[in-house]
Image (cartoon, rainbow, N blue to C red; front, top):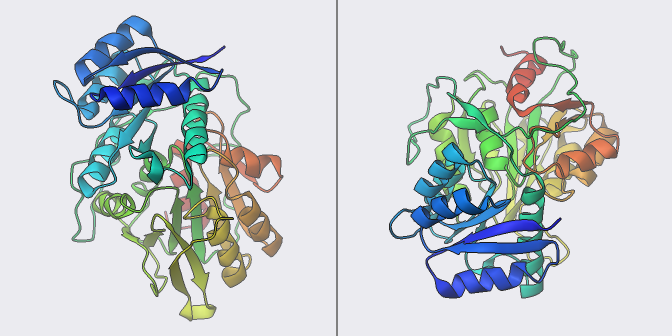
Length: 377
């Protein structure tokens, strides 16, 4: 059955272009168009699409407000299109807070190395989130109270997060934080890799970590370069720990999360107390993801050996599997997000199917499990 899509944009040219690209795939059917957010809400009620592609800036009702109304009345997977500007990044993050599942740059030349790759990426994203058609959402659960210790603040207040669990029959997770004992293993660093659905997943986890978290945290999120500064600043304003966009030469410090800059690679260098981050432009055509979970995980394995707790969260593809294998061979511990709470069960599934993960954990349990395993609760 084809994935049914509603295309929402105030530009007739962009609506036509998106429609033409999507309908090149026999598994996608464009069933309608909307020229503003108000019409998008009405058309969603009428047509009940499997996926909505949504512009951020529109007349009558903007994309963020439209997302809020749609998620309140007829929860539907929404893919945002955004400009690669600071304001565009902030607005897109707000749309994700409101319930959108993923985003792409509005300029297709910014999506991938060439036009054919960009077309495939858009088609695949729509099919992936469309196959996970949300039949219902639980009501939003307020985020736990936070008391940021840094002076940075997010551009906008936090919005409570809906439970994005899908009503499917899946294998149970390996237990809740309250029932699973800590392994007793000692760690020096935590590394977290994610893609589609990652911004909300990372915010869910990091806002629950205590200020006294004893280790540095590496964050690898597939995200354009224009978005990572805004995302790091937002997380820093919401969390008790410090969150920053990684910079060349950063020394790894306890209780600090380092977000890999978009469009670049982040590596760990050194041993002992002199470990620093190397951040560099990567013009290699062989590397699809910039930043790449595999590359950061591999360097972390080399520097920290088995003293690593790595977590692979929601995301398309298999980035992180090869790096997780190197970590596992060095003696590290690997966790994967469970299928039920993933927006896309691609990256965690790749790690789990390869026999690399020791636990499959629901998103809402990851922070508590981390605190228990690390021993800082």
